[in-house]
Length: 120
Image (cartoon, rainbow, N blue to C red; front, top):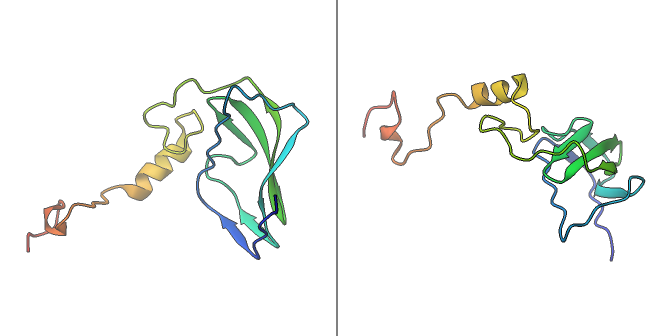
């Protein structure tokens, strides 16, 4: 299977990993999840590690790729707290910042039904 290599990739979203059929990676296995001529930024929920339902990966950011490695079955997130907006299994200041950034955003149609807007 060939690889797609992008010229420039800027990360700013969320990492989401699922392990299927009870697969458990070996600690030393590495998974290149993004490869480009240049990679900048980080996943919002995975600065240096990614904790999810299946366990934990170390996230390695290199100038030209992003790698998941050093899988551990523990700790693992059994359930995301309701206010865990970045899905790192902790409610902290990052979640508060995400909430503050979205504060008072309204997607109602028509927009006149949003608070503070006059009906048209």
